[in-house]
Image (cartoon, rainbow, N blue to C red; front, side, top):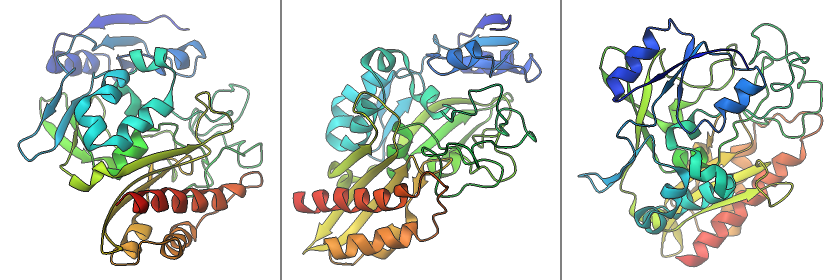
Length: 330
């Protein structure tokens, strides 16, 4: 781990100002469950850390439109256990509980979860070529052991997947990320646009501007999200990363789909909102035949690598299974 300066911020404006004074070489520090690991591995080498744990961002609050605002510093364990989240957005609580051990959930924050970096083997191996870690160096995963890698939205520059479970649920729930910049201005970023596909700039994981701080995540009032589910398929049940995951919410009337939200995890560089499947399903019979056709439509452009072609069928079957279970509950 390299040497670094340490600063503690008391409010959001001070935090972004302290970061700006470091000329782009500093990082915000919340729970640190991912950042500190990356620093130990010398993948992240910030010259300064700005501690934001004292910022008043630990609340889960109702919004006037019936939605919920989640402070960026809310711990994962508190969010998963919150009564409102469990009752109105069970898919989010389920995703968090499947994402990490209790010890990690007690430290990890909402904002930090959004900022997780990939768990690609080659990203963590300094001896390997990795465009995400060292732009322009190449990508050893393309021809290497790529069983866990992307089947959707990848590029010749990067085939890594996004590791978060929570973010998949937030993408399905139409969440919006609130951020503050160094000039004091605030803006919102839809969750589906917050993370980036790799393209030619895989080193950029998000659409945050330099120095911006995540302050909250807003989830709109989705009444039918009470009927939601997160399913995670992994090599072992003990907190492994997803090979494929599905976050879904479904409303049916007279056996037909009225509203549906779908997102996939473990298949792309970002949580993959399954808009093609959603659009197809509205008005269709809520049955296995329709669900399978929707899955085929969503995965038709999948481009598996040598070791992960199984993910295509796995994603289809998981999507059908989740939607079928939700349809039965209606």
